[in-house]
Length: 606
Ligand SMILES: *[C@@H]1O[C@H](CO)[C@@H](O)[C@H](O)[C@H]1NC(C)=O
Ligand SMILES: *[C@@H]1O[C@H](CO)[C@@H](O)[C@H](O)[C@H]1NC(C)=O
Ligand SMILES: *[C@@H]1O[C@H](CO)[C@@H](O)[C@H](O)[C@H]1NC(C)=O
Ligand SMILES: *[C@@H]1O[C@H](CO)[C@@H](O)[C@H](O)[C@H]1NC(C)=O
Ligand SMILES: *[C@@H]1O[C@H](CO)[C@@H](O)[C@H](O)[C@H]1NC(C)=O
Ligand SMILES: *[C@@H]1O[C@H](CO)[C@@H](O)[C@H](O)[C@H]1NC(C)=O
Ligand SMILES: *[C@@H]1O[C@H](CO)[C@@H](O)[C@H](O)[C@H]1NC(C)=O
Image (cartoon, rainbow, N blue to C red):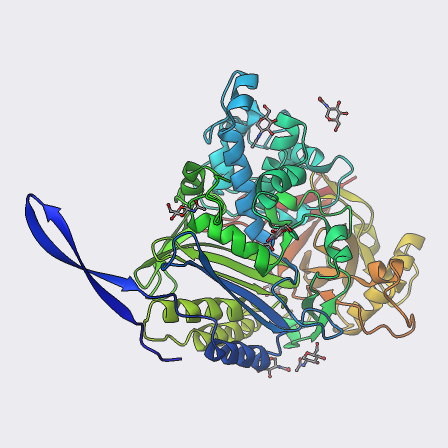
């Protein structure tokens, strides 16, 4: 589409100091469509080029011809589910970290709640110290723990790195999760660094429970989803699955960058979290919703918190402004000349694109990548949802394609830029690997003595199982672990000369850790996820001998773990490093004389 925008020049007059000045005011006749056959061709071509599954988008603008009306366009591409069901505006996607803005809004609504302030005799504030609200709160560093405010948590500057891999279903829910945070090492001082942290958003989801005796999910439903008519939005995996609209997240089975294996694209069936497992993750990334519902959400944001059709306040304007105002520097350097550095408020990044200010956030759950963006000065919001683990670069280039058209700017070939970068990063990862020495020194302890149970207060216990050619020396529990079909599949794809430990590790994003021996006491760690057991338990497997539906991800040897023996008198254990804790920015690794002191996460012998 290359039609020129039609401008109507309308002469009006204004009176300034008694002088009549003519004012030429451009009046747009209409918002020309942005979801055009040209965009359709572009998206379909990208999906085909990358063998990608599906994409759903919505573009929202206030209709400038008739204030109070909205132009809402949808684009639906590719498949939502393995059986070929197509993406529609009602297909549900996991929007992942785009859920953080709902959490931030809930905090803002509680801050603005007059009756709550009256009942507590004290107003909740952005700078309220969290220790004064949540009795479970305690961080490892006493001085930091005392001073952390709600704002610090929302703007990722508490000093705590991600520690995402400590995530698991806990009987005591979010409350129990908060009370384990004291066992997590900090990587910076308070307000020293921007370090993205999901645990803080999970922690803040406990506020409605603590202050109003109401669940976070019901609070959001009552005050956001229902007023906005976001009828299919939910935190409940069971509800989303029962609707039949939940997209499958496509992932790459047995992908292994080390061996340059792309893996096979497969639908993750069922959804990676099972009903009952999703509660702790809700505040950070738990919303399941559609392009249609999100069109209402972004229209409300463009409308400064008011319902787009009735103008009733859903979220006070000051809250919408506050969460979108930068507090931390999330990106101190622009990655491309058309972008500016970025600041982060509460669940919102803010920077500029070719002179146009943009407020947005990305989202990433297994098999789902999302982007919810708006240009507050340009009457434009763009939402792009992908159900492909590799969909990120596709949805980013689609977003900019639409923005370039909306702003009538010369088109930048973002698909090429991001595509090249995507391919290059896989290559760079491979090339950064130091090959294992040809005659590596053995560890300082016999292999079988490195088994046993090791614990960390937040991450729980691990019991590594050594994979030996003979099962002698293995206890029964380990024999069972090693014989498991998933473990056999993992082992069959690796160099079987490398001594290996398999560690059952059922957490939010993993089922196993794999330690591959490097040299001495050092091992390369993969964080492996498999859905095989869930598929069998829930009856998704027709042919038990040969199931093509199992997905195994995470074989990338990304981290390092060091065995620490007790010969020098201390506790033996496993010391994880190489950014297992998920730091941000320029944070230095922990310093210390021993591997235990240098550990980002330490599991000591129980
Ligand atoms: C909402 O507010 C806008 C801008 O003030 C106004 O033009 C529109 O008519 C209002 N809509 C309703 C339903 O009141
Ligand atoms: C405000 O607080 C009252 C209790 O004081 C509660 O009933 C109400 O649901 C709260 N509303 C919001 C939006 O937080
Ligand atoms: C919280 O609500 C439940 C019902 O949902 C009630 O049984 C319980 O007593 C309430 N707790 C407090 C402290 O009010
Ligand atoms: C949600 O349901 C209401 C009532 O049926 C309807 O008016 C509204 O348009 C629906 N919202 C969306 C986003 O479809
Ligand atoms: C992996 O995917 C890339 C990009 O699609 C392709 O260029 C490459 O040939 C693939 N490698 C293998 C081993 O299939
Ligand atoms: C493309 O995706 C399909 C469907 O998931 C899969 O069967 C096929 O192997 C994929 N092709 C490539 C080259 O990865
Ligand atoms: C394994 O760990 C060693 C030591 O840290 C490192 O040099 C090497 O690159 C790692 N290998 C892989 C495959 O990541």
